[in-house]
Length: 433
Image 1 (tube, helix red, strand yellow):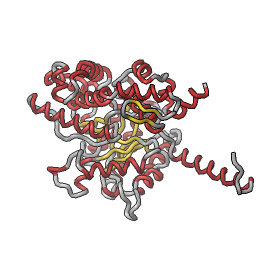
Image 2: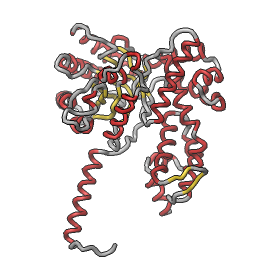
Image 3: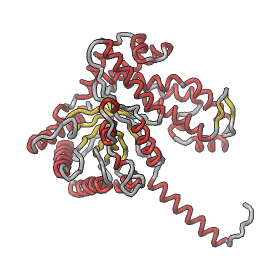
Image 4: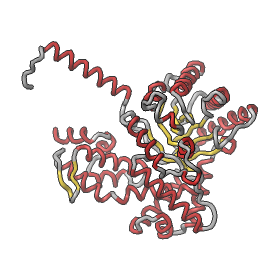
């Protein structure tokens, strides 16, 4: 290194302070989670939940597909998918609906359940816990599951935390202290960091009294209010929310309809493509970038129910909303009806398969050039683009659009390299080798 005008001890002190700062940042913002992010969250009222809910939803979805799109060409035409990909997508949708129809399920004690007498919600909190325990025992639960409690506002906070306690207490009694994999609690309509801190404190207390390991309980936030975007002092609200979560927050889900209502947008214009929603979601991305917290978009509220032409229109709208989310970096969304599952998976698979050939060529070329900028076709790639291409293959593989073998063959990377999630690490090892 060239000589500096700073004394060695001063330079060492500066470098030490930088190392400490970087360590704090790494601890606060650990980067992408190694877990597989679901492509959707399906939610349903707690009073309706049964241990075999995922399988029933899958059966309903398959019937809808067979009735309204009995072949690949019909589905492709309904959703506006490239006909050349139709057969490939159709077979994968059928397989998905058969093998794993639901990736994430949220048992709802809020909007989908409503305000009921206390004794009634008490009863359902325990009955649902019994069903989840049964599903865990017989292997019928989806890969991710959780509950959505009521908001922690002044009116509902006691009710919300009582349901939280009753459900978890009964569940752990029935499972001998074991939570389902990827279990999460959803906190809706957050308006202040104090509400986030309150749920974190409730998790601390529950873990202590039930003798769970610290940090076992995780939760996610629903961004449905303007106060969740901009705090009263004009600062970004979400970083404070994350800080008050004490490392427990794993995801932030955008609530399209509550948010647009909060912005005084009339019902006719409350939809996922409204500019107000895009603004809020850009703010979420910026505030949470690098934290490893998953982002999820909202739901399409036009249901694919009725005659074939009505179902097809609803499917196409759903697919357009999903594509908009994917293009803008939101890889998860909410589904409200089992007949939305065919369009969910078809739209996700189409998004990744359409660009697979070009992405494969660009990534292989870039890796072979060992981080030297290269021109492939009419697109100029740099290191940041290399990371983007790596993310593309990871997302495509994780959602099931391509298999592991396809991912390695088309990317030119090993499975270990893909799962490293770091393009710079891949290049560093290859150049050293």
